[in-house]
Length: 341
Image (cartoon, rainbow, N blue to C red; front, side, top):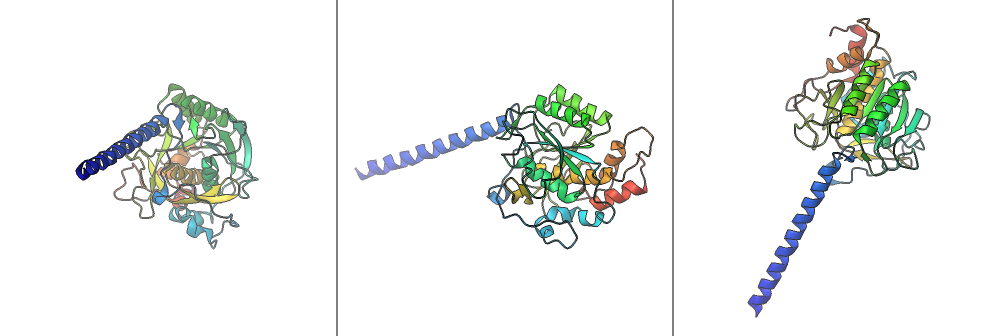
């Protein structure tokens, strides 16, 4: 009888394990499906197996070399943004469009930054209820404190979006005067999306796009398009960040692990992923746009800006990207000194 009881218990445990495996597989399949079509815009990877949006009380932020917040915002120090502030802190004439889940303007560091906004989603509010867009905007402003933002809400309050909606957001942002377009989104290829990317480039804007968090070399869009600057994520050791995509189609790398930034309701917290890496490069692009000139006389400066960002990268080993780790100080310095594509 006891053998039968043991056998029954064993079979029950096996059944529980099988159900758990099946449920886990379904969840993974669902996550993969959300990354395409009605896309989960960035597939954020939790930092250190913890919640990627942990909250802290709001500190006072004033952006100087001595600020203690730089200890938390390690990525800003790693790309030498404070050194670049001695040359330029950005310019209010430079507008960075943040195509994301919205920007929460109640945050003390973002309240006066938003120059224009639009809601392309079915959400009843243009504010960020999900937390991702606000986090990206906070990193951009921390790097380029004098720039202004454009809140282009293309992802809903659950972080979902469609390529066609992102395409509309890009065109709207360009037509409203955005020079830098930050797209921390990952989705499938779409003809309208590529056309919008090419339109932005033709009008003198630069699109910074997250390479995605698939942990492999599979292309992600819009980052894969030629007229986007694709960004992988790195950690504090200059190694590839958790789940960051990579490959010869990825142009540059930037900090994307345990990144501390603003969240809704005047909170702060950490996120890990190429989204945060893209936000770092968007901040650098805003700084470069404030000092770059049309050296080749073609009527635009986005080509000079991209050249400066790519050709000022610091080589890093073991990270499969085309150029290397971005450097704000060297990018601004190279912008001022020369341009030779």
